[in-house]
Structures are given as C-alpha cells and as structure tokens.
Length: 327
Image 1 (spheres, rainbow, N blue to C red):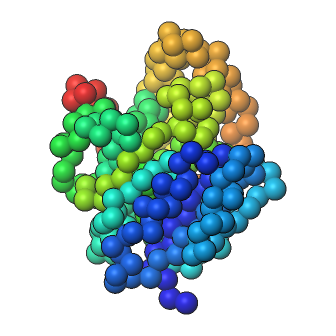
Image 2: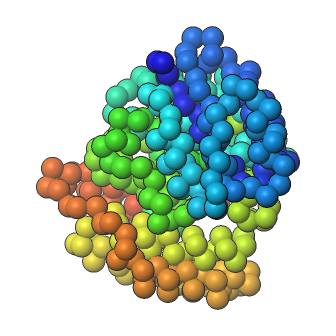
C-alpha cells in the first residue's frame, strides 16, 4: 500500500492524554489528498493507555514487553512503517487539523530537506510558545527556540539546527542513508544528534510555522516537571555523546575550551536548582561510556558541511542570547 506519511507515536503510561492525541490525528485535513498511517509503540505501560489505543481500529499498536526507551520505540515504529515520510509525535501533543498537511508540503517541496519542525505551543498556556525548532551552540547547549515567547512570534519558515522529535517530520530516504535514532541515548538529545548527522551529510532541517500543535511537555519521563534527576543526568550524558559522535578530532580539539566552559556553567546553574550532583553524574557517565557510541567517520566530501556547522555553532551563541532576551 502506497503511504505518504507514517505518524509514529511512542507511548508510556499516557492514559491521561493519548486519546486527545489520537483524536487530533483522526481529523487531519491531509487525509483528503494523501495516504497516512498511524502507529503507536507502547513501551510496557502499566496504566490503561493500551486499552484506550486498542479502541482505535485504524491505529496499529506495537507493544513492548519492557521499557526500552524513546529511541528504540521510535525506531521500531519507523521500521514497521511504510510512509515516504515519518512524522514523530509525542503522546502528549494535540495537533491542529492542518498540522500534518503543512509538515508534508514543506518537506516534500525540497529533496535536500531532511526534517521539518512544527510550531509547538504550550498546551496550558496557549498564548506562549513551547518550541519553534531546536538549536545547538559551541558551548554544548541545546535549547528550544521561542520557548515562553508570544505565540504571535516566529511566523516565518526558516532553517534550524535540529527538529524536535516530539512533533516533527523526517525523510525516510535520508534515515536510510544516515541511520535511525541512536538507541544508546535512550531519551533526550537524540533529535539533536540525528539532525546533526543530517547537516554533516549536507541536508537541511527546517521550521514550518503553519504546522501548529499543543504540547503538555515532559509528561512521561519527567513526571510533568521541567527538570528531574533522571532528565538532568541523562541529558548531560547524552550531550557528551553528541559532541563525541559528531565532531571530528580537530573540530573537537578547537571547540574543547568552549565546551568545557559550557559544561561548567551548566553545572553551576543546575547546582543552584538542586540538580548539581545529577548533572555531574551524567557528565561522568558520558565521559566513561562515550566509546560505546559509534563515531561518525570523517569524510573529506563533507568538509564544507563541517565548516558550515562550525559557523552555526558560533552563531547560535548569539541566537541563544536573543532567545533569552525575547522571553
């Protein structure tokens, strides 16, 4: 069966919001001119969410016997799907009726576009943005553009560093070329990693403001909180993985003073919030286990892409400052 878009939704204990997410997929205008399939990958939920999902006859449900993490669940969904494009959606997201259509139109317009991120709005604060594409800078800081800013801002399509895997679409042909999500990450920063790999290979990541959705945020892994010991530690570890995996030796050497400063600043900020030990533990774990990560082989043909990425890492420091001022 020809399929244009595969919507893949990882689920873990999502009984409070999975129905709203699925209902928003049932009324997508995209279905008027394209073929769409919906796959939910349940990660061994202990609540009633599986029974809720089973009530939707046109939704394919894959059930895992153990909780293996966001990345493995997403990969399972991608491998089981048939679409030309894979749209990843968190179970705590509710999408506007034209959400899939605008993501599809944007990515289908240019074969060099690897991924497209949506306009994510805070579910409980509809006047504020949640994410309009992610950025990563030379200090090793990943951040959500537009977070907390007015919902009326960021209304132009633009290039971004990384697409948020919580509500973004990816080109299957590029996934076949560069690989799927790195399951060693388990959760967090995996979308920065895969977008980074796309950039290394000369592809583009974009933002589409017409693709609107509403995000509760950290509903599954962080117990509804912006920070948790688990999230802080695993994110710190995965940041080490991103740097080691994607930067060639010379780039890593040049950037190391900035990365060290960035990690020290982050430690101070998390220590102030009571998560200093968790952040330090994550950095320690990342340094200890980074060699289990498959490093991206340096290829001379990608040299100009590395220069472009380095320029973006520097420029994104100023974008980070602008993003903070804009709140």
